[in-house]
Length: 453
Image (cartoon, rainbow, N blue to C red; front, side, top):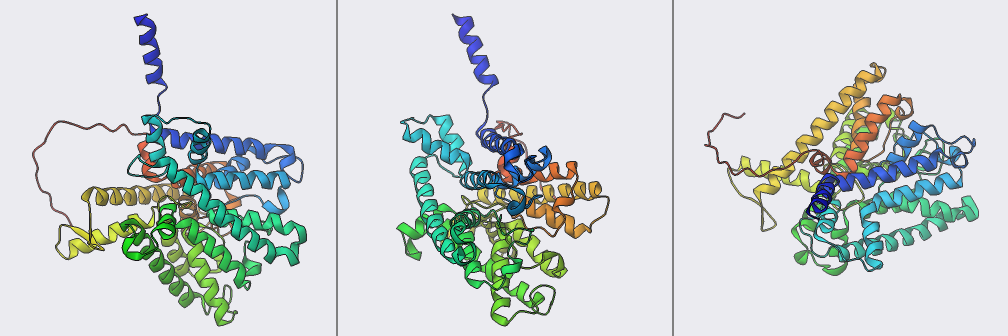
């Protein structure tokens, strides 16, 4: 009896996964499922199915709501293939753990401590309390926002597509809210041929912002409504997003307004609209309204920075997150002023959060640099280094903006981007912790100072 109990305990220990590993595993399973479905003959218009590597790449891009693609969704995929993509984008944006939790709760399942830990990790929360209620709000907000804009976009598309406008409205509403950036307009043009359709860009931009600010921020706006009652997290997210959008818009407009290859030939209103939309989209969405390969290098550098920062926590976007970037700036400002405490909006930010922010920033930077170097070597210097870095950061930030070289990667290059997209979607901290065992040491060592700077 004792022997059987011991064997059972050993088996449970052997097959026990950490919460971070379960989060990654859920995405891997979804990616593999999408890969299989996209390889089926009836997924593509040529009745051959996608090549395994291409199917893996596109499935990863959709599941991680990136937007980089090596196939033309409009011309290469059948209705079934497009529905598969829509499913991957929606589940990838919300997170498979979120949907699985809601289904389990609906069937009366009671969650154990370990399951709550997994949910806490997948939702990037600090506490385990109120997880199910939070998930309910996430689903409710998603359905309301996506449903409303799907109807609006369907009406907008109807004169052009007829009854098919319903499908176009649903797909682009989900793609924009989940910050995926996939479109059904064909020929890899994204919105380049629709960059004078300010109404369309306004709707998609609003969806990108709502999906990128995070569900906790949306909850504060719905229930608390007043700035004084907002949580510190919401205030930081709102300020960060406004500043990044405004600064990005100004820089893009100032540099590109005379570039006839991008927005130089447009009227002032269209120039401003395209600059603002690009500033919003390049954070995590991936829609582009002009040829990014023709943009000035300063604009591309600006976009790389915005893509690296990304969206906000508990959102459908990636990157190191706006709050991480904000905490780093506040920490630097405190150092410059000779203050030990980081205080913002009358609240103190802990040193633990500061350390975590710098760790995320450092790990993200190292990942992008190493992945970019490997891709550059694999590329054989066919493309410029800034183009390779742009592609790498676009994958890491789950943005999906490309400059025309995505389909040119070989198998090894696509696999590097697959891992980069996965790390960017689940979060670089979660990704790294899934491979590292954390242990608290009881040993205290003597302290000694070293010189810095």
